Structure formats: C-alpha cells, structure tokens
Image (cartoon, rainbow, N blue to C red):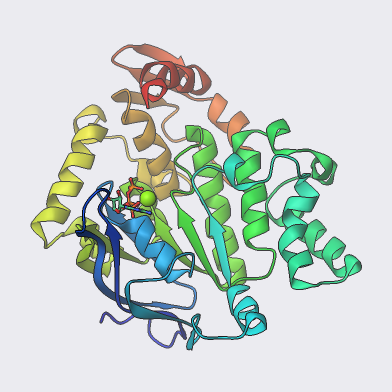
Length: 346
Ligand SMILES: Nc1ncnc2c1ncn2[C@@H]1O[C@H](COP(=O)(O)OP(=O)(O)OP(=O)(O)O)[C@@H](O)[C@H]1O
Ligand SMILES: [Mg+2]
C-alpha cells in the first residue's frame, strides 16, 4: 500500500475492495472493481483517472458507502461503515461529502438554494438557528450572494448550481469529499473558477478529496497523488507530478499520449509563450489547454497580462485576444465557437 503525506492522519482505508455486477441475462458476474486497496490521508487530494468504464465511479461509490462492495472493506476515520447502529452510521456519514458531475441533477428542483443546503443539517437534527448561521456562512464561502438563497436550481447558471452543490456537500463539515467529474459539465471559464474554489476550500478546511476526472490537467493541478485505473484495477499509483510526467505503466503512457494528442498544445503554442509564468501559472495553463483542446491556439495577447482567476475572471479574461488557425477571437467568442463546434456534439 502506498504511503500518503508524512505525519498526516489516515482518514480513509480501502482494503481489498471488489465489486461485481450480474451480467444481464446470464449467470456470469462482471468485475467492475477488482481487489483495490489504498489509503487516503487528511488534507490530500487523490485523483483517479482511467478510461470510461474502468470502474472509477463504482470504486468511489464503494468507498463512500453509497453501495456495498462485494468483498473487502472500507474504514472512515478508523471505523467501518458496516454493522453500526443507525445513529452511529449517520454520525460517521456526516464526515463524507459528495459533488457530482451534473450539479442541477444533484439538487432537488423544488427546493430553494437555502433548503438544498439546509437539508443535510435538518436531517442531522441541528436547530433552526444553527442551520441559518451555517447556510449563510457556506453561501458566502462558495461565492454566492444571500439574495440567491430563495432561488431554485433552474434559476441558476451551471456554475452557480455547482457552487450550491459544493455548499451542500460541505454543510455537515465533512472531512472527505468525493468529487466525481466536478467540472466536466461546465463552461470552460466556469470550470476554472470552480476548480479554484475547490482548491481554496480544501486548503481552508483541510479537506481530503477523492477526485475523479477525465481531464488530466485538472488532476495535475489539484491532486497530490494520482491512481490510474484500468479494468477495475489500479495499474499505477504515485505522486501526480511523477506519474503524469514520468509514467511507468504502458497504459498510463497511452492515456497521457491520447490526451495530449487531443490537446494539440505543444505544436500549437509559440515557443516563447510561457503560460506558467502567468499569475496563478498552472491554473491558467489548464484553462488555456482546455481551449486548445478544441481549437489550436497560436497566440494569446497580451501574453504577459496578469490573470487573476480568484477575482473577476470574466472581465480579466475578456481583455484577451486569442489567435487560432480559424481567426482571432475574444475569449467569449472563442467559448461560443468551441461550444457550437466541438462541445455541442458531446
Ligand atoms: N449498477 C450496475 N450494474 C451493472 N453494471 C454496472 C453498474 N454500475 C456500473 N456498472 C459497470 O461497471 C463498469 C464500471 O463502471 P463505472 O461507472 O464505475 O466506470 P467509470 O470509470 O466511472 O466510467 P466513466 O468514466 O464513464 O464515468 C462499467 O462497465 C459499467 O457498465
Ligand atoms: Mg464515472
């Protein structure tokens, strides 16, 4: 088993977890997760990557007690989720938070933002006064305004919805949060903001993230460790900087090469264009790699403009012009282009 960051407390222990499903119309079992063991430590981000169908979400569901493993065990803060009284299980579960790909789908459309965030606290039996205090604290922490508390999910943008989902996930002050493709349904500029928010919250609340993503740049940016999954097994686990820069397993190499080929970034960027030197380096790099995933970027000007993703991204980014093989665009024009051209088909 791989060691986590030195001195950190172990918060989750996954031991020999397998999950098998009955194959429809047959007696055979399909192994979606195959004997996985890994430990998560306080404050760390584990990124799980791998092809579609490799078992990432199923593993996460087993780890977070959404489904039970066919064999193996999971401990949260040294305790098993299985075989506890209801009260104890509820207490233990309040250490877990969930953020999924489709923010609108994870919020009850009949509920107001306030009620959606308050629900887990009501279920826990908190007093009205405590709930009110907590909801107002959370709404501010995720960058929403009080006036948005009475809205319903369909009255919010995708990014705002994901902020509500994050506030709700953090309501009970969890220690470990599952992020299953947390940014992949969002517009490109919004993805960067949500990623920034997640990083800020992890730092401020010492959260541990179990993050699943298809986007290797998101993983590289947020994760301390990365686990590469194939056919229900981890084929490679290690520090994300070393796994993504120097992959050992042939499958990891293939995954990275397919991903980089899609990005077409190395050939598209001029040699003197150093995204890393921009303010917030890696995050900008990530944002722009996302653009070049759909349109090869030739030049972004002004190239050395500071870009603060923590503040008002939209107005900062609007000042940029981006030259591509198909012409020169402002950021919003480009996003529209990529949406109609490439993203629209997804
Ligand atoms: N409830 C289920 N019943 C039967 N098979 C299932 C069930 N849930 C998942 N599977 C199968 O298990 C395998 C792993 O699925 P899983 O959703 O964990 O993959 P994933 O790595 O999260 O994929 P993606 O990247 O597309 O989200 C798939 O072949 C899937 O069809
Ligand atoms: Mg999945």
